[in-house]
Amino acid sequence: MKHKIIIDTDPGIDDAMAIAYAVAHPDLELVALTTIFGNVRTHEATRNALALLDHWGVAADVAEGEHAPVTMPANEPSYLVHGRNGFGEVEIPASSRSKHALDAVDYIIEATKRHPGEISICAVGPLTNLARLLERDPGVVSRVKSVIVMGGAVHRKGNVTPMAEANFWNDPDAADAVLAASWPLVLAPLDCTMPVVFTPDFMQALARENPTLGKPLAAMAEFYARFYRSHLGIGGCVPHDVMALSWLTVPGAFRLQKGALAVITEGPAIGQTLFQPAGTQSRARCFDGRPNHMVMVDTDPEMFMADYMMVMTRHAG
Image (cartoon, rainbow, N blue to C red):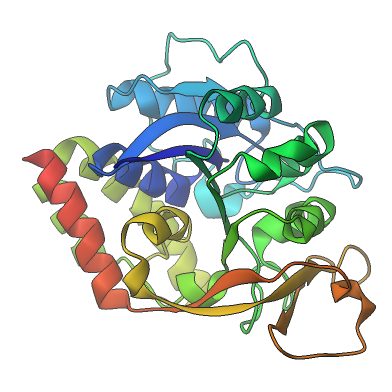
C-alpha cells in the first residue's frame, strides 16, 4: 500500500533531493507540496516547487504557505547555502501552472478530511504551516497518519548557531508548538542527517543512472558541496530532507530514541532542541504534559545511500 504524502518544503537543494525521491519511489504517492520560507522566500519556494514538478512531469498540487514566522521577524533566506534561486544557480524552467486556490493550511485540512488516517506530512522546512494548522484545526492531530519533521539537533550541535538547526531557528515558536502536539510525530534531526554525505562520485553516478532526475540534482549538488567543503570541510553534501521520507520507506536505516521534546524560543540559545528521554525525569518544566515522540538519533549511511541509489535507478528503468 502506498504512503500518501504531503511534503511541506522550502526548495532548496536537499528539498529537491527529497522531492525527486518521492517522485521515484514506487511506495510513495506525492499528493502535494506545501511551501514555506527558509532556504528561499515563500513565493520563491512556490515557484521552485511548481518548476520541479513540471520539469519532472508530476501533476501533484502546490499550495502556498505562510510568509513569516509565528511571532518573530523572518530571518534572511539561506541563499549562501542554496544559491539565489534555491537551486545552486541551476536553472529549472518556470512552470506555466498556478498554485492551488487553497493556502497550505487549508489544503492540508481538506486533504486529511478526504483521506482520514492516510496522509503523512513530511515537513522539511520551518514549521510555521504546521503550527498554523494546529491553531486552525486542532482535530487534525487525529486525522493524519504521521508527521515526520526534519529539524532540530538533539545530541549534536546546531548548524546555524552552536545550539540551533536552521529549520527550528527560523521559527522556534512554531517548532515548539508542533513538538508539543499529541500527533504521531517522528523527528529527523541533525543527529540522523549529518552521518550521510553524498559525495561528488555518488552524485555523478546518480546523474548517469537517472539523467532525468539525477542530472539537475548533481548540478545543484556542486554548489551545495562547495558550501560544505568551505564551511565544514566535508567532501560532499548532506541530504538532510530526504530523511523525512526515508523513515517511511527504509526505517531500518535509523536508530531511534523516544522522549519529550521542546524548543527554546528566545535568548542566545534560540532554536535549540531540548530532549528528555522517555522514562526519565527532570525538574525542567518545559516538558510537563508533553507527549513522547520518536527521534531518529543515528543512521546507517551505507543502507541509506544504497536505498536512495536503488530507488532512483529503478525509476530510470
